[in-house]
Image 1: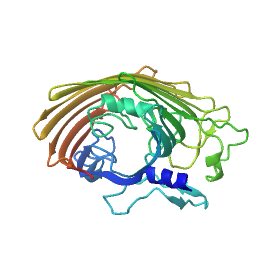
Image 2: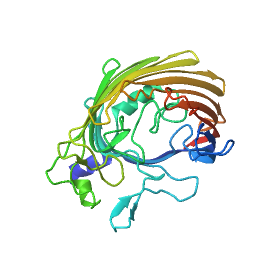
Image 3: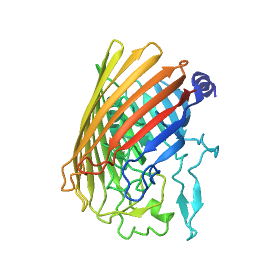
Length: 383
């Protein structure tokens, strides 16, 4: 009892709540439309308030317990609350017309959600829904993160990820994070560190019932191997990530995101590799990345991308710019490019006014003026 009491006195635990809110006015002009009259909005145009212009709004609940001898237990649970309609945190289950449980993909889906152990000497391990090394590498290279101006998104951007319409289809590369994941992160040695994320593939014969959205979530799913190597020393940060998402011979998966299952092709591998870096000198930071995406499917992917960017701090004002492109090497030849410009003005350490402008061309080979132009002005606050 005395030993237990002593251990209890030594152990320390804490739980913190933090977050970020990003809301602003956006004007989106989707360019050419064969059906919309001149001067009218097309189906993709938008004018009004939108979230996440410069960062993803998030509520983070995190905890840690000191277990002694340099070992700690940790957990983190992140949600994306809705500050536009006041609906609180969504992402729960509803019923479709067949009475099966489906998953809401609107604002409110969980971001990271994991439990794990960490040690200064041995590194850390996380179990649950965990960010990928590919996302970390992109963050190293992008002055705009994953927000406006970056080109990180689905639907014609230069660095494609899963979307609400196809959240975990193998036909979309570079998932941001994975369910059912195990991620190990090594300690740093002279600036060098490594990380491995792994999701076991489930490929059971007969596990193909997509009508029952409850039981299918526990049957077949994609396997993931996601490796990251990183070097950080003073002003220089370099990261390489290599990711492989594989669908088994049965071809039906439990989706990576929080949505209902769907059928996918069998024996499909999606491979992504990215090399990213940034360097700070004085008030300026320069960014760059190069990457490839490949897939062996009936709608094969074979693309190579590159991006450069920079930011410069002038007192409370930070100026940013970025340019990127994606070279489609398939017969479709749907090359993509994007340019982004932005400015932040710091009202305090936690509150910023921002302005963003991006021009995105989802297919530079077409003759139509199909560029999407987005202007955003808003407020970002962290707590």
